[in-house]
Length: 119
Image (tube, rainbow, N blue to C red; front, side, top):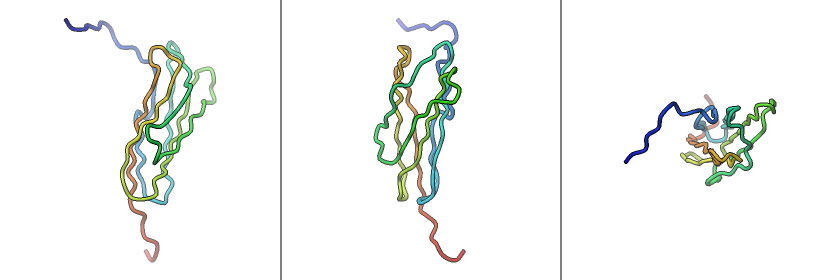
């Protein structure tokens, strides 16, 4: 016996971009912004934000200017100062019974800083 789903799946939230790529050179600011817009039919509030690891990223969750739609802006910034790659996830805890947690995946790729000198 399998599970049968009839009808289209309804959209719960718009997340743009769906995943964050922090690519750049060490020593330079590497930042990204994610828009989180709940569908009106499934309005929810984000209660908490935390990173799985948090070693290489800083983040801040802001409520959007249009409080009627309850949209959010997640700002993520690279903290890694040396060349290398990393992966992290920002967990957003919601008050929704439909989807109590939203995950935003973060990929980092920091290249070696360009040497200073004559170019």
